[in-house]
Length: 104
Image 1 (cartoon, rainbow, N blue to C red):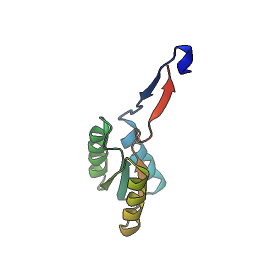
Image 2: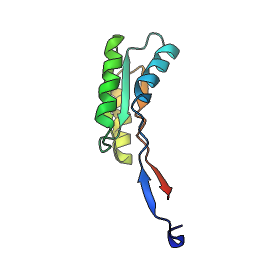
Image 3: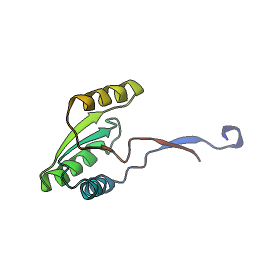
């Protein structure tokens, strides 16, 4: 598409409200769950806001959030190795973890 006058641009899709909603759904599916891990991309500008919203939502119901930052495949491998060492009820991905590349 580049040759047709289109430019490839990276678009991050990160609706902040999705994080707490995901947590709420997980709590409905796993009523006894209190400890959640979040796989997050620290390079995304909205990640800090999403993590804060998730922490607030978890604290409101007596839960806990452990943040696992990952950018590369190696980071993801390390995050899952960490998960194997810590008891966790569920894993969330921040809504902006994957990046969407589209042609404009």
